[in-house]
Length: 153
Image (tube, rainbow, N blue to C red):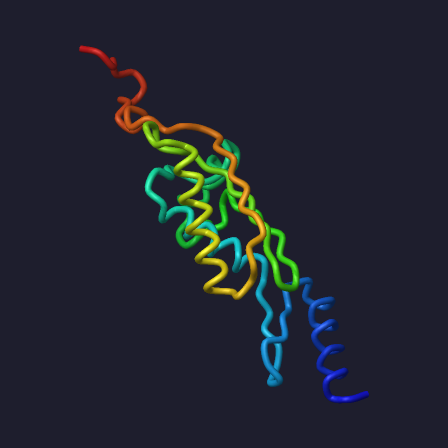
């Protein structure tokens, strides 16, 4: 077996062993990018876009609130799922949008930022970014009084 064949076999074996994205970038070894890395990058890139209130559907947000109560347990991957191949990634993102923001513009901004961040940081080609808007957040929701207190005086 030649050195090149050996490297190719090594890459395939590493991918099979770890279940992760393994890409041969040079003659000096392999780079492995775990799915969670792509999820975190996409989650951070999504949160950077103005008009995104939160990530995830209702259940994910409830679990996220519980997680926030625990020190060091906040999840950057909430509301983000990815499929990572050898050279490409597909990303699904669930969000809550701020009221008053044009959702189609928000989705375009998220796509641009996620694609740019993931491609620049990992070298993977992002084939698609699917966005689901689960809810719209009103700023009045944050100002509601505690239960038992009248809203109107």
